[in-house]
Amino acid sequence: MNTPNTETGTRNDMPSWSPPAVPVSGSEVPFPVRRIYCVGRNYAEHAREMGGNPEREPPFFFMKPADAIVTDGRMAYPSKTADLQHEIELVVALARGGRDIPVAVALDCVFGYAVGLDMTRRDLQGELKAKGRSWEMGKAFDQSAPISAIVPAGRIGHPRRGAITLSVNSQPRQHGDLADMIWPVADIIANLSGYVTLLPGDLIFTGTPAGVGRVERGDRLQGAVAGVGELALTIVG
Ligand code: MN
Image 1 (tube, rainbow, N blue to C red):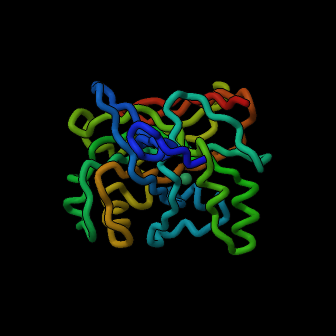
Image 2: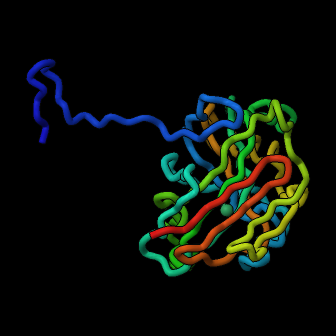
Image 3: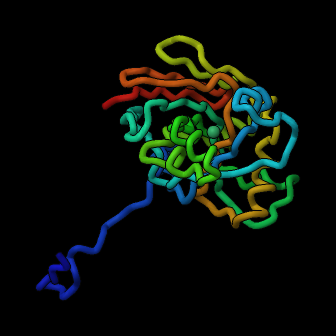
């Protein structure tokens, strides 16, 4: 199109865009999302159910686009899958960043915590994995990162233990404890900051406990992390 704006002489098809943002509990100002990092296999029981090694190997990471967040509790069933799966996760929101952050000061970077779902096209992820290809289209698709409001760490502190659960249509599916994370939050921040410069606005999904499984259109998901909050999601479309 490239239609010039005759009044200003500028092009009027320049995209207008504002960063995706997550509501903050108790605040009018939402948290602008810069990047979304995710940790793979951070609970031993889940590592086992995925056929992997439950030993304490260094954490590994993948990403989702910032605009994959869903904050209105409704996720459209995605294309190209017949096996959409839930992974309930504790999410860390960063107020500060850096490179090679020491474990001892890593929690100083945290703005707050939320409850998130790392939604996964498991069939596609499996096919890509088997061919040695990137997981991206199995993990980093539209609406693949539903998230609750962020609760500031100044109010709740830094949760280190407590139940992390997910039910689907009131049936329990996932149950774990934050204390069972192979790599706790401070270690994740420290390790990840060795690969990339972390910055304010980054979110980190910290991995899921055992019990991941399939969801269908119309399903109602209810996730919770003790001391942080709850996340309700309906699969639509
Ligand atoms: Mn995950």
